[in-house]
Length: 147
Image (tube, rainbow, N blue to C red):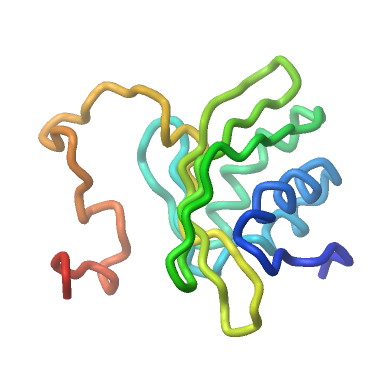
C-alpha cells in the first residue's frame, strides 16, 4: 500500500492521480481505482477490473515522464463526480479525459470510469452510432436507464 493519501474531495482526484503516476509506482496508481472500475483506452474498447487497468496504464508509466493535469470541470452529485481533465505527458501524448469517480464508504474518492481520451473526437463504431452501448459494462451492471 502506498503512503500517499487518497483524495477526500472529488476535485482532488486528478492531482492525486498525477502524484501517484509521477511516482512511477503502478501499485500507487492502482489504489485510485475501485475494484471493478472501467478503463477506456484510445481504441474505445473498455476493460474492467484492476488487473486490466494496471495493464492499460503500464505503457503510459513506462514512458517515464511526468504527467500534468488541469481539471476543466468537476461536477459532483452526492457521492458521484464527473471529471473533465486536460492532461499531458511531457510533449509525448495529451488529451482530455472524461472520468467518473465515486466517494467510497471510507470517504475517499476513486475512479469508477477512467476514460483518458474521453473527450477526443473519434469515429463512431459500427452499429453503435453516437450512443453508449451496454456491451461495455460487465453483465451484472447492465440496467435500463432509470432502474
